[in-house]
Structure formats: C-alpha cells, structure tokens
Amino acid sequence: MVGVRKVKCFIWVRKAHFLGGSTHTFSSHTLISPSLCFCLQYRIGQLYMISKHSHEQSDRGEGVEVVQNEPFDDPTHGHGQFTEKRVYLNSKLPSWARAVVPRIFYVTEKAWNYYPYTITGNSHCSFLPKFSIHIETKYEDNKGSNDNIFDSELKDQEREVCFVDIAYDEIPERYYKESEDLRYFKSEKTSRGALQEGWRDTQEPIMCSYKLVTVKFEVWGLQTRVEQFVHKVVRDVLLLGHRQAFAWVDEWIDMTMDEVREFERTIQEATNQKIGMFPPSISIGETPLSSLAPNGPASAPSTPLYTDAPEFLSVPKDRPRKKSAPETLTLPEPIQSESTAASDPADNHSSLSPEHTQTE
Image 1 (cartoon, rainbow, N blue to C red):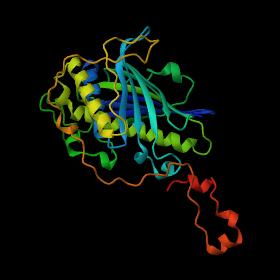
Image 2: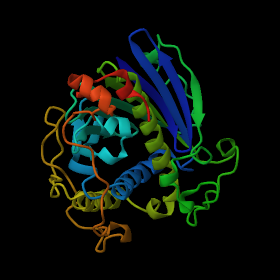
Image 3: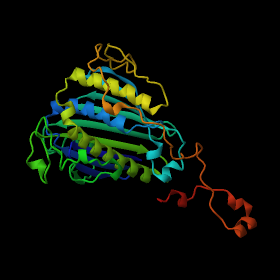
Image 4: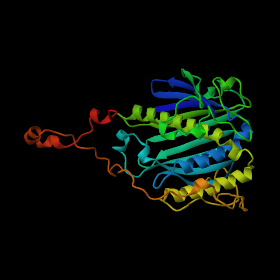
C-alpha cells in the first residue's frame, strides 16, 4: 500500500489534495506562503533555512547527519546539487512506534536539487526495508493557483484540496517561538510583514512550492497508522521550515550563492559534531558528478567566506536524556492477576494483538 501526498507549498499556506484508490492511499498538500520573495530569491533562503533548521533540531544522538553534499549533473534536469542525509529521530516518535523500533535507527534521505525542481527519493528506514518516502517539489511565482502541476501523476485519482496558512495555522507547541510568529514579525531589511488575515491576496512578491509526497509502508496492521503519522510529520516540518525561512529573511536576503553554500558547509559540519554519533563525514571536492556517478567527491567553495561561526552553533552542555526504547522489538508483557498467571503460565507471554497497536 502506498500513501501519496501532493503538497503545493507557498511558504505560508498549505493546499492539500487527498486522493484514494483501492490499493493506494494518496494525499496531496499545498503550502502557499509569501516568503514575500520570488522563486529565484527563495533559492538562497531555502538553503539557509534547511541548514539552520537541521542544526536547531539536532541534539546529541539525534538529528540530521549530512553524509554527502555535492554538485550533480543530470541529462534531463541539468546542473543541480546531490545530498545524502541520515535522520535520527527515535525520541520524536509516538509511544506506540517507540515500542516496536530499535533504540537507535535512522532514515536515509537522498535528494537532487535542480531548483526550481527538486526530488527527494530513496528515503528508507535503517531497520525496515518496506518503508520509503518520495517527494517531488516544483516552485512557481504564484499564489498556489496551479492545480494541474502534478496532473500527469494524479490524473486518475479523486482529490480533496485544502490550504495551510503558515502565519495562522497552529504548529506544535514545542516549536513555537514568538520571534518566528509571522503575525507579528516584520523584516527590517525588506519591510515585509507582519502578515495579516488574508495576506495571500495582498502581499507581494509571493511564490509557491508544490510538493507531491509518496509514502510506502507495507506492514499489515500498522500501515494506516504509520502513513498518517508520516503525513502529519511532513506537514509539520514543512510548516515550521517555511515559517522560519520568512522569519530569518534578514539573515539570508543579502547572501550570494557562494556565501550560502559556505554557510551550509559550516553548519552541516557543526551539526554532525552536535549529533555526536559519528565524526563529520561530509565529502568535499570540486568536480560535479555525472548522473551515473552519484557517489563521487563533493564540492564546496575553496575560500572560506565566514571567519566566525554563528552564535547558534555552540554545542549544548551534557544533560540527562530520557530513557530510550529497548533495542529489541519485543513488546511489553501484559499485566495479569496472580490467579490468572498461576492457572495458565503460558499466558504470561506477550503477543502482537490488536491492543498493542491502539493509540495511547
């Protein structure tokens, strides 16, 4: 079974198409947001936001490890950038998922950025080969009005469309920051913001990122729950990331592409160190990869453009961590009365029953 989510993302509003079939489950989201910039301008903002966001969301043992980040040439899409990342996220899983996964696991993400078209594919879980995520993204200078941007892929599917507003839709409480609340934020360098109700119809410039997200999880009994959870996570990550891209506009608006690439390299190395599970492993080189050689040397500017690391790069002090889930896939034994246990000792063994998959 496959879950597909078509996401049109403007940095601020999400428009979602939900599609269904007898053997596939599809859902489609559109984020429409005014980074209050044009597509070409947002290219730098996107790179800046992804690097800083990944660093902020990483901690010792968990977060986003960058394995490769290098130029890549494709005969169809032209010159782009290839990245491979490992995302460690055990503590961010719901309790029902932590009970059945190893203490340490990661999702491998490979992405090809041919901006304004990007592909995030081959995303697999380290211990679960039947799980994968595929995302296609297209950026356009409009308000999310292109309903046919992915029609070739979805022409035979029913659709339900909804919008997500990055200024007024709720985000998880743990991610909220007043400085990133777009209802009140105003850019000093661009004078863009604050975003009032109906901003999508009054603010310019405005651009939209359309995302088609496909989730595949072939495990009976958990498929629907896992696909719904992944769709929610994708929605939350996109909403938070695009809020931050606009809230951080004064930090990246004056950057050149060379400067943001050097910033990206510096932050990625610091993030790898912050995770602390592996030493920095970003490959560095200057030769673009061909489409047939995705694992060649990486590229980064030869002359550093920053001499001092940003303030947010400081590694946090050691602090107690919550106890993680067990490394094995055994489920907890059910609590039984002494009389029951005495009458039938075999019943003390835990089994994978429907009760174990209920939401807490």
